[in-house]
Amino acid sequence: MREPDLAALHPKETLEALQDFRFPPYITLAHIFHAPTDWGFTNRTLKQYALNYVIDGRGEFTLEGAVHEVGKGDVFFYRPYETHGLRSLPGAPFISITVVFHFADQPFQVDELLKGASMLGGYDGHAIEHQFAELVALYRQPGLANRMQCQALLLSILSGLSRRSGSGSGSGSADADAKTESRKNLARLLLVKNHIEHRLAEPLDVPELERLSGLTWNYIIAEFRQAFDITPMQFLIWARITKAKELALQTPLSFSEIAERVGYNDVHAFGKMFKKKTGMSLTAFCSSLYETDHHIERPAPKR
Image (cartoon, rainbow, N blue to C red; front, top):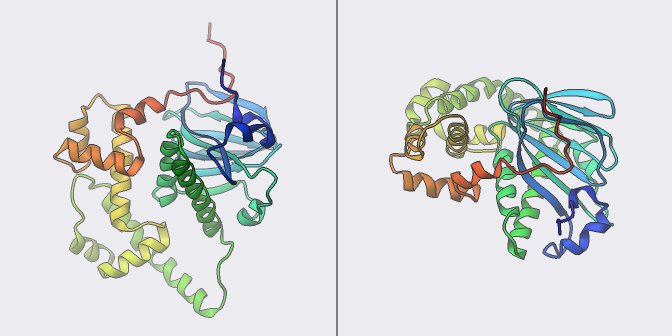
């Protein structure tokens, strides 16, 4: 007998199947989806909340008639009963993470938290991207402990999205001065970020990063975390994982060659790092991309 599509049901209809979740939020879907060519759907409504994170490629997201183009790193959100659609655009394969969830009959001010927004900005290189991937990996594992970790990750994602959108921020001249100073340093921090991202096979060169930015290492760490929600070392690890995924999907390189490209001479050490940070092996990650999305109609084959 086929398992019910929990993401398509009313929240109350899902609770019996979600007994590993002892309290809200209840997560009914968390997976990575690799869209086939010319993929898309229109005029769909869900009875639950949904978050989407774009891992790669470009798509066109439609919500209540408004059209938004989305690309790598973008997060978008839709609420129960909002009419929406999504289609892939030509270019790189469209790969995204979908998380569908609800709070049953418990009050939770999602709109207050996200200030009514649907397009939540770009998070390429932020900790939130890793949190989405970790949530997907843990969701595949049964048990109360894994379910609680999934809930914690979802709440952390929502909190991070809220902070980025500006809700819950402080006020006052000191806070304003700090934000002004942070904006002044953003260009320097982007130089640091780009330097790291283009030298994944190398260890962090702290003196070079200090010379490049004109900032001390401790100040770089503090400002980098404030700007990107992640430290430079965490970003290096994240970027290595992201590059490894890309090479595994788009090239014929062996795992040892991929490991070397992202700074690991020992393929076993690379494998342990990848599994520790994502919750799955690189082989399992590649396999997970070919799951079928929920209630998606494929286009008819071209004649």
